[in-house]
Image (cartoon, rainbow, N blue to C red; front, side, top):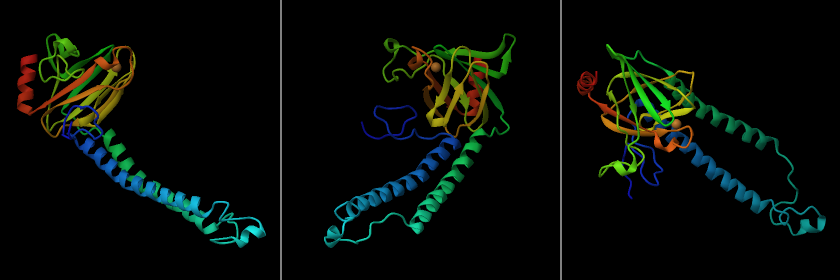
Length: 254
Ligand SMILES: [Cu+2]
C-alpha cells in the first residue's frame, strides 16, 4: 500500500495523520524540529564511537614501554581532558534548552481554552463512548447519544473495520469547541490523531481540552487506555462539517 493522506489509520502506517487542527500542526512541526537534532546527535555519536573504538583500543594505547615502540597514534594513555568535558556538558545542555522552549510553548498552548462557543462532553464506558451536547437541550434534557462500534459482519463496502460507529460526533469547523472528557466505569482515553487530541477519561474526574477544526472531514480515533476486553471495540468518529450543516444536524437531532 502506497503513501496517502488519510484521517484514519492504514496498515503499516508510520507517518502522522494529516492534521486538521492548529494543535496537530504544532505537534507535527515540533516533531520535524526534533528530528533535526535527533539526526545530528545520532550521526555525531556514531562517528565519535567509531573513532574511539578505532584509536583508543589496547593495541594503539599500550601501557608498557615495549608496547610504546609499536605505537601508531600517540604514546601517552589518555585518562581525562578538562576542555572536552566542559564541551560535552555545555553543548548537550544548550541543545536541551533549545528543544525545551518550543516544546513547552506547544504544551501550554494545548492547555489553552479560548472562549469556546460550544461544549461537548465525551463519556467513556465499557465499551462504547457516549456524547452530550450540553448547550443544546429540549424538554427531555440535553442532547446526548451513545456511539457504538459497527461489528465486522455489519460493515458495508468501503467502511473501516474496528473504526466505524453507529452515531458519529458531528462538530462544526472554524469554531472554538470545549471538550470535556470523563468516564463512568474505568479509565479510557479519548484520542483522535488528526485533531491532535489524546485526553485521559477518568471516572470521577472531568478533563478539559479545546478543539478548533480547520477543515471538513471524518476523523477516526480509538480508545487509548487499556480498559478491558472491549478496548479495541470502542472507536471514535468525529465528523466535521460547515457550521450551517452542523446547525441543520442539531435541529434534526433535538
Ligand atoms: Cu476504553
